[in-house]
Image (cartoon, rainbow, N blue to C red; front, side, top):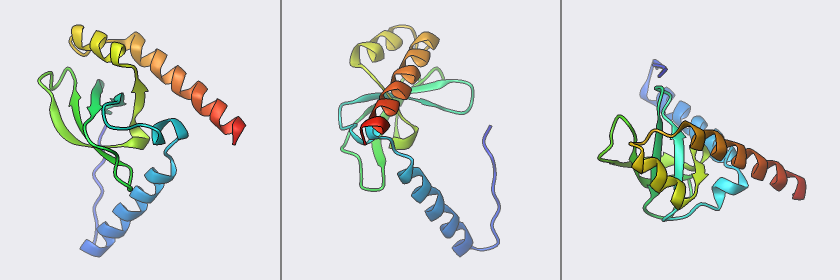
Length: 127
């Protein structure tokens, strides 16, 4: 569920945003950092459904990517920015399969998250 945060000043809000962006950038995993234009992903919307998308331009240094995302709430697609730290990479054939099912595919979500967790665990052991 979205949370509303109040601020006493514009400067306080900007400091809060800068700190949140710093934490998000620090939380990017090696698997997420390797993502590039053309890659597919899923993101938990926080509203009870997932967003499936494609990175349209190379990720920016701050970790944000210009993307085209689809979901049951927006099946026609919507352009926007998504942070790498929130993305779970999926394969192109998985993206096509979930598209064919109207952006509903709970077993894909479970498999993709398990894959990401395994890759992150392996990456941490080799660093």
